[in-house]
Image (cartoon, rainbow, N blue to C red; front, side, top):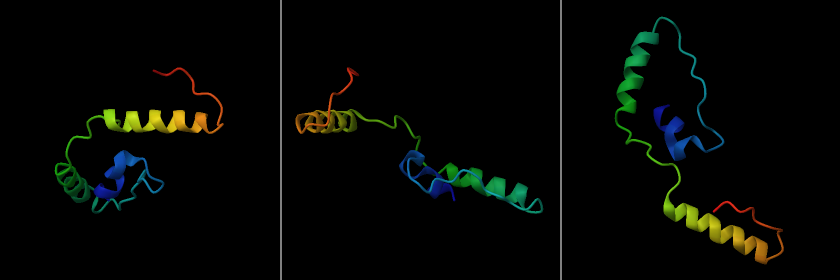
Amino acid sequence: MAFGSNILHGQVCFGTERVYVHSSVAEKFKMILVEAFKHFPSAGDTVSEASFKKAKVTLYDAVACGAGTVPNLW
């Protein structure tokens, strides 16, 4: 559950939004979940310089192929 909700910063179609837990095990579940999240590195920036450059190149390539215009974002 912890892994599935963190993979790719949640930017996947099966991101975990809700988890239903029976009240009889809720406290234990919460403790286990908190412990599981401690093993994930900090998310940091979800967009890196490399991903920005790749997106920019892709956008300009699309325009060169007739996709229209790119808004002035940078």
